[in-house]
Length: 375
Ligand code: NAP
Image (cartoon, rainbow, N blue to C red):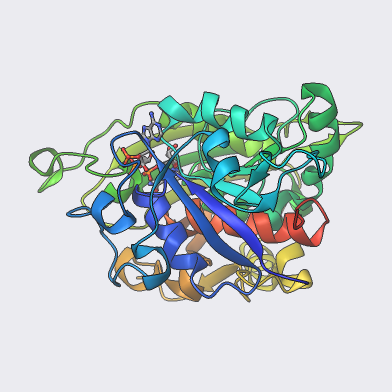
């Protein structure tokens, strides 16, 4: 590549935004050139904007410390840097931007309008937010599961008259769930799923759940979570034909709980298959599973996207969430279930594999497929 792609982060001050900053340090293809957040943070240096709420185990990287946080407004981006934005002719000096594309870790209350405005202004937007995930022309993407769905992007651009586009990654429970089910669904057809989640507090952002609510406790409700877990996997595990998504015919029942762990969503999953299967054969499928990111050797791709652990006491949140830099999904305790046929335990890192890492892997896939380029 002639130069690294210049990247902006919308929602750079939040839980997911901070993870983007950590994961993009020393990225071989992408470099951070703009940070943006709400008007509360805009105008401050990044280190001032996150003072008291930088929640990572490593210091704020030197390359972003003194960057001024921008408002999430494409006009501000366009006047900030020197990268020509899509469609701008040489005479339009003002139509320069500082980024080739943006990641979004925006709160859903703001993501809708802001992401749309960036896509309309010519920016590819790689988003974590829920707002566009289920739209008929927007890819909901996990590269190991449905890399081919990216092919709908030109249709989206034409339909919405956008020079940019929006690509989303799923909810942080759905990523590990869909990845674990993918090889099983591919071979045997999954027909029913019952999933119970035990979700870490970082999934609620910062400051998130009050400590007096979650310490010594389990909360049996996460607003809006269960409908996402019951529907998003159907789009991911479905097919894309003639610029339309056909959802997988799977019935999913989800019960989502908030538990007092910091990172890592832990799921117990029971499932039925259409074709008869055996525990040993499913285990073999999981162990040898590889997707497009592994074949393409994408920089953030885990070597083994699914790690099967034979020890009945694993996976455990504290010990297994960081496997392969938090990008691998750990699975264990696959066994027969007297009601649905099979059951297993699944663990994924919510802010890495379920959020920032997922979006970065999506961007790597989109770059390799020619949807992202330097401007
Ligand atoms: P968060 O910690 O609350 O951060 C939200 C970010 O959005 C902050 O940077 C905030 O900026 C910005 N923001 C809020 N209102 C804004 C506005 N009106 N205009 C511009 N910026 C605004 O949330 P999070 O956990 O990082 O989640 C971010 C997104 O990712 C959400 O859509 C969430 O559903 C999704 N997600 C989160 C996870 C997870 O595990 N946490 C996993 C998957 C997906 P200020 O700091 O300036 O207020």
